[in-house]
Length: 266
Image (cartoon, rainbow, N blue to C red; front, side):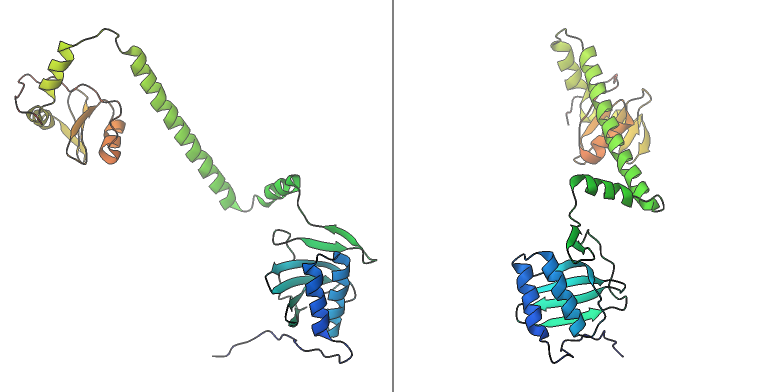
């Protein structure tokens, strides 16, 4: 297996200059937040020491800043990007210039740009307005997955909202239409009679199985058996499925009438 490595010039080819000292200066200047124009000049000198062509530094970016090591992308006029690495122990490396480095992107870090006289022209720090504008611009129509994702999320949010409104509206209607008259004996009698196990067995036998553990009685009432074996009655299959899967007893209804009321209870 043959491994191909990108050559890195870590030793000076010019004996009249000391790249280690220049690398330490650059490292110290960045840590001390020296004006970017000074750092740009030294970066150009360091690149030239390694006999790379660099007429003038037009831009540079502190791509990675770690505790003892800094990686810098440097753009010289008319040349591809160079990579410069400086460390606190004097280590220096210069590489690139052949297109192996990706382009400068201000989403990675701040980019410092310089005018022809070497003065700082601008940096790429984003304002809130610029950040919003760039986000909108990156939503290219050719990237269909962005729009599919956005439409899917919007549809999901809309579905959740509509479901919540429907549940609230149905509960409100039931509450509003509920009679105010108090009944004591009748509800108790119906509850004690119609919720027996035998009565539920009869109703299930009279019903048609529409889903696992969910039945529909000829009267239109759905009977759902929960995970613990309890059987409940609902007017809608939606609430029957909800009870079966989640155990939520929403919008239960009165069981259909059974002529013979068994005496055993569930």
